[in-house]
Length: 151
Image (cartoon, rainbow, N blue to C red; front, side):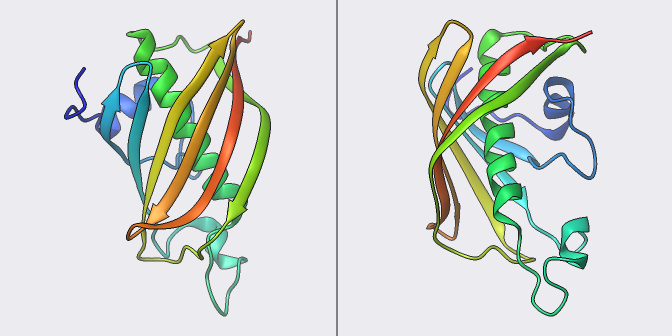
């Protein structure tokens, strides 16, 4: 798949086990196998977390931004494998390093999710990630994940 290729929501649903309200990637806009991914999340006032975070001034929780980045990273790994994972394959967080929150994300924003594969060794994947709005970094972090079979 070339950098110009796109993964639509139908392919995303085949690759990720997440569903509403926890699916946080709407589309993949760039993809380079085993290298990088660029995806987007349209942030709407209908997100369930906005009712409590914060009712007077809705702000996307940082942990949800990190989860969106992890889902984008998982898409990079699953699509790089060239086949959709079976229903017993999941990706688990192993670590989050150097997370820095630099911009508030609000309803109406389009969150651009970027993940680059730094290393894949012994079933451990390390990614450099960044989420931005209008070219401004909202959060950046190094994520470590692993793929596991569950029954």
